[in-house]
Image (cartoon, rainbow over all chains, first blue to last red; front, side, top):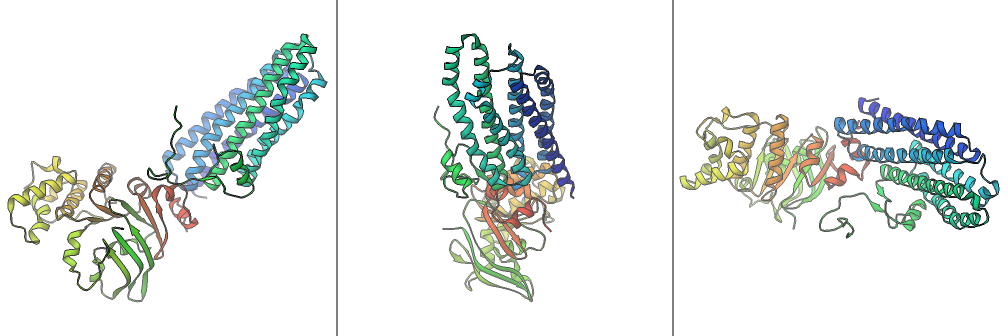
Length: 252
Length: 250
């Protein structure tokens, strides 16, 4: 293995370790949530600092790699993608910590199981965890189609998130003593939905790295077309010249 | 219309086929970089544009090579006239054992220019264009060898510019220079493309990425990929190009 490849492998190992840590944060935050376990919630909050340290480490690894090896083509795309994936992972860990903090704030020993069922919170959490696991798997396998499959799963999160407000409003009307819990649950649902968005961002970065295709801001139809193996509406990463395809920033 | 065009160029050193059917076009006022491993034919191809390979024993070429639509290998083409239009800068600075002034004036004098006022103004203009004037204006009569390597290379560029070519060919012009001199040459290339069409052979990938508008990747005498430089260095179409520019080749 060449020196440059060793450095790249070391960097990927670091971000892989960060991925594992963030995954365990999400799992633990979920366990803490569904059992209102404050010890587990405390552990999530304590470990958040390790995620922050990983973020700085991976960022510095990427900077060093770019400075020392002047990567181009697929190597450059990998570095650009890892920098953004790194930021997204750190944000996801912030949401895990946020969920844990709400668990700490719960006053009652358990959440109304009937309400959880109505909200489909277990399903939402499982779907989010599966999305997150798929991001890791897509990069490990270098499989951009697998990364593309993540986008469809986000629709489920969006749908559950959308349905949550009227369900909780109704519950508050019938159980005015549970206002605070309901508000906490709404915030938690929003955080889970945001984790899904960050998983989407990571999937976009993996597709950029592997296929040099830009799915960001491409719209649902283009993303679905990409997943079906069609290129409709997906921008190839290419030189954008002044006289042809220069992207124009939206007018403020 | 393209400034330079090659159509199905084959070039042979004896029985060895150094170029295998190269077809490409270069637009005026652009910088085109030729990259590829040693022996891939990029320098051979560059030299065809001012017919420097004519002097190589046993060499022959087929195909059409044109500048401004005119076949530069046509029988009626005068090679010395062609070379006035197509200047060349080599890997190592090669100033003549003359003064700084006379190095730049040399091309004009051998072309029969005698007007000393005209020569002086052209020397100054060429040295300014080569970003060297401010450094040498007070020592024009000193030997060219008194200059640093980077200054000597810019002097050679000034010498090439003095006869007002429209194309400048550069064969690894900065490979023997330190980073500061290299940066000056690269900055100069960027400035010169306003007035000239530049073709540069380089082994330095980052240099190709920095200075050129288009990049051509050669391998074993074939043109493997030719595209916008940003495309080549971010998302090359051909795997061999990616393997070469990322250092995975071979």
